[in-house]
Image (tube, rainbow, N blue to C red; front, side, top):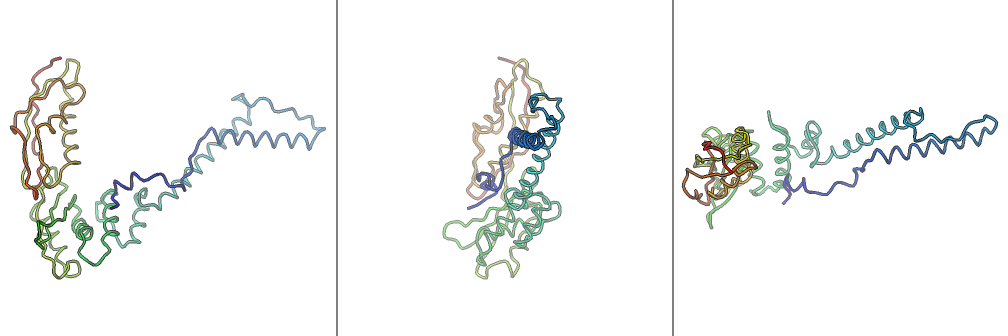
Length: 294
């Protein structure tokens, strides 16, 4: 299934020309030399000298050729940009808005390009009138811009469709108003399949606070502690999912940045296990600076 991450891994489109200033300058210089030779041949009595100063940076033709080559480089780059602006993988801003309009998708207030592009992909994948996963996920994301993501799943042979919502809040918890907005969108008569029973709830139902003792190397700035927390949160945001355990080894390893001597977990003790239908969120991160060591 095509996703925004898959789009980013596609090979460069053939319509994009690989540009090289030196190649353009060499071509421009060769063209000038050829024209100069033609002018000399056509005007033998003019006493025009042979052009042998192409290596001089102060020679006027060299300066003109450099300027012309750079102008051509910019123009060709502009053509490249215009070509890829019509491709979903590269379109941004207003170009993305116009491309999305073809699929009857409109940007939500405050919606950033990455999220908007994800909805366009889901709209294309969910065009079937049936209640496909992509279609329900698209509806959930379109219900409110605060929806960071939605996971659609069933349990065993149960016909109930579960929709787990991740919000854009720091802990990912979807509050009652957000759940109500998504539920209303999914239950709408023109959206829900007649035989489908849909239950919407927050994906994150447990927030885990982390505490660790940290020793830094002698020459490491104390400011690294803030970077450690940011790195950990970013890593979890890219990993967080239903049923994903928060293991002690995983989160302490993310804190072991260059310049850190040792990380000793204090809380929680051991691994935090997530049920298959529940996502964990990282709450507060307390890093106790214990000193410096080798």
